[in-house]
Every structure is written in C-alpha cells, then in structure tokens.
Image (cartoon, rainbow, N blue to C red):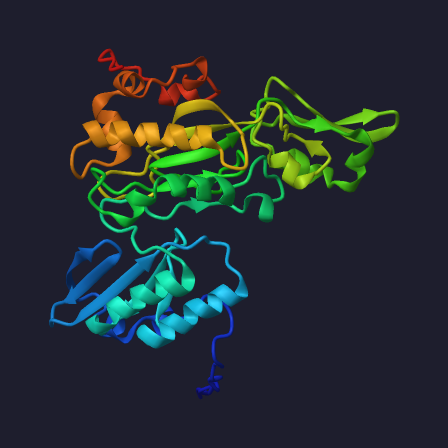
Length: 364
C-alpha cells in the first residue's frame, strides 16, 4: 500500500529585502517599450529623444549637479520633476540629473526652471565633458589627502563650455577625481588622483585602538606585520614593500600617511570599465607631481586643459581620449603637451612583467 503525502504550500509574503524591481520606477513609456527602442538622437546639448519601434517618443533632459545636495535642493528638484516630467527623475552614475518627459512641449519650461530655480546647467551629452564623478573628499572620506568636490568645482568652472556644447571635442570625455590613492573615483578617460610619497608613520601609543589582524590583512603589498615593542604588540611597515596606498590608515587612524608637504596630484588617461568598442583597460600615468594646492588647484586645471587642447587639435572624430593616445603614441603625447617624462611613468612594480612592451616592434 502506498501513501501519498500532501505538502501544504506556504504562500510567500511580499519581498522585503534585496533590490526592488527596477521597472516600478521607470517611466511608463520605458516599461511599455522595454527592449523595443529603435534609436535615439541628440536634439541639442542636454536633450535626447528615444524613439521606439511603434513610434513612441521619450525625451530626456540632462543637467549637471554638484553631487552633494541639501534636502531643500533635492525637494526643489523633485518639485520640478513633478511639474514637468510626471515625477520621473533619475541621477546618473556621474551625478547628472535626468528628467524623462512624454511631452515635447515641457522641455523648454523644464530647462528654464532648472536654470533659474536650481542654478544648474543643461548639457553633458554628445561630444562633451560629462559631469565629473568624484569621491567624498573632506566632507566624508576617512582618509582624504585632498578634497574631491573642490577640485571638481574649480575644474568645471574652466570646462563649462565643453559641458554645455556637444561639438567642441572629438568624442565624449569622462573625468573622475579621487581624494586618496585608493581611487574610489574609478577608471575614466581622464582621472585625477592623489599620490602619497612615503610609508605611513605609526604612533605606537595609539595602535591599541586598532584591530591589528585587520590592519595586516588590508595591505595589498604585505608590507605590514606585527611587532613586539617593550612587551606590547604593535605594528611595523616594511618600507621597501609599501606602495603608499593608504589603505591601512582607513583601518587604523594612528597610521598616518597624509602629508600636506609631500602629497601631490597626478593625472591618468585611458581608463575604461565597459566592454564597448574595445575591452576594459587600466588608466595610465600621464602627469605626475602636480601640487595639492587648494582652494582652486590651478595646476590641475591647467594640466587638464593642456591635455584636452592637444586632444582637440589632433584627435579624430569619435576617437576616445585613450584611443587617441594609443594611436599617436606616448612620445608624441609628451611632445604635444610639454609634460616631462619621468621615471615614475615606468611600471617597475612586482608583477609588472605582464605590462612591459616585450615586442620587438617597440612603439614610443
């Protein structure tokens, strides 16, 4: 005799963890035509139109934001979205505002409100410089050697025309800025990063507040190890191994690596994380040793403008910044920009063998 066991299926409750269904926040036209968009066009700087296979059109207006916003400013942004964009608004990964509109007639009044009520500029589309992605800097980072929002504000004051126009560059340029050497700003066509120049200085009396195993484990170069001093366990840094990244300072504040007298800024080119056009690529050092000079960081802005000027003059249409450097070669890059080539431009770290040009067809 066989017995059939019946199992009561328990009805699942609503999902209350993890990421929500992204479609619930999309504009209705996006949901309706998901996967069925035929093409998009740049109407004018800061304005795009997406056209679906059935003829539906969705207009998008993009504006730059300072990224760090007050609650009052966010409420004003949402109010404009409610008035002209049916409440549909998103922030891009580069902190641009994007309003989605079903009515073309709302574009002009929305742009007027963004400029007059928010004080923001519309642009960042096409062959332009998009809003700069940057780290927290002095506002919130736990190991900043410089600010991030400050240099970005000063730089975009200089590059304002390249943001509000889409015909001044061979191709779109993405810029990032990082306040420490960890480089949370990420890879970009042009990246501005802090650089330390000596190992961290340890204060033995303060090491007791730190979790020593974590500090030892966080070092990517295995340059930190425990040490017994006068019967107490402390830490020491093997200077020959240290790469001056500062990761240890985030785990143990008494391992101070920041130094206002020696910290400098550098510019890196050609970073890319996506697989479009060609595979992802690491950015490469272009300018080394720029002064960390607040509040306007003029040397950094000048170096960026110098690079972009050479790129404008010799870059081909649709050629990204890193592709331009690859085509003309680094020797020509240094000739065009006038930046010095230093020993720091040569990759001599451990495991660097894989990055050396070992071909007999050497191209400088």
